[in-house]
Length: 493
Image 1 (spheres, helix red, strand yellow):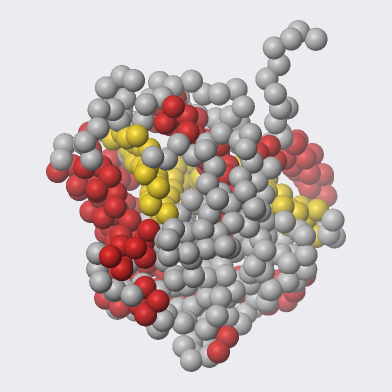
Image 2 (cartoon, one colour):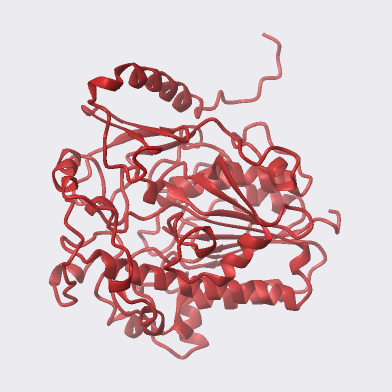
């Protein structure tokens, strides 16, 4: 292993939308440390997930393979397929000291722990989520609370009963714990480079930032969700499509009642039947501001110990959040921008372009081959993602990477109130977004150039029949291309 190979800080937030970074256009949120990353690195403004649900998305960017090929489609899987290889395992085999802090979520954690695969992580500080429903023998965050902070995790979280409101103090927050553990890992003595996977739970629901962060945002000063009255009727067609938020509601002017019984259970997976969109957005932004500060604390530590210049940083989310858009919360089998479009930023001082914001269409499946190629490692034949290294180094045009992106939902969610098996696919070419709900008489076609809010579904419009037919052919080709041909061919016949 060459000593010139960089360390890798891989920071993946949970359920963070694309439009939540000040340097990339949101003037209502404060993200000074992520802004610094944008200023010093390359930000991809049109990065899309391969699934809008945690496990299939994470399996895709950790293997560099689409869900149709790695066959990891669902949250709640009993185990991760033995034949699939995580890129972190490849790095470990190449001499990297690999660590994980926070969430992994490649298999079910329903029993209070998660069955590991051959993931390559020497350090495994696992915390699927911060709530005290996990096996305490496996929950590293709760061990920290109990053993180092002298705090009973069950008692600490006993008052967090609403889906939106004040959470635990910042000094006891899971995001703070993640950074504390990361600094310890980085400071360990070692000969070669390290790779650290950081996976905090925020800003995943419940929307419960510390009080001092929540107080920084006045809901009345924030723009509300993307919503029109027509959404209330339009979303009724999707009641039999698997999603956590079944009915669209008007997110404007409804006050949250923290004592309402419907808010007291399953606050992380089942949204309430009423909510105030601006209050939700305020709490969500506050959670991201805490994450930003903790991310900044980690980057500043790297700088202070002289490791920042030789550390490749990648920052992204596993998927987005509806956040009241179209009257919906949380996630499910919908393909609106807030859910499938995420931030993606790369930084490596002196190696990657700085201050570049790219409009190229990219996918999270591209991250694994990018990291491998960046450090001089071979990209295995079975990886389907396309490396972004040429754009990062300035050796390729910065405005084009792929002609379209694909997102797939295949019976992915088990926590919806109504969850019959649902299979749907999205193909987006930068202007037209087509969604096919397979087995249902449903489809969506949006022209994001003319309708960026995705209010006008052209699927049944007789004036676009020819365009729709052409896009359906492209959709079919793009979706089929996500299925791997399988084992490498060595024979000629």
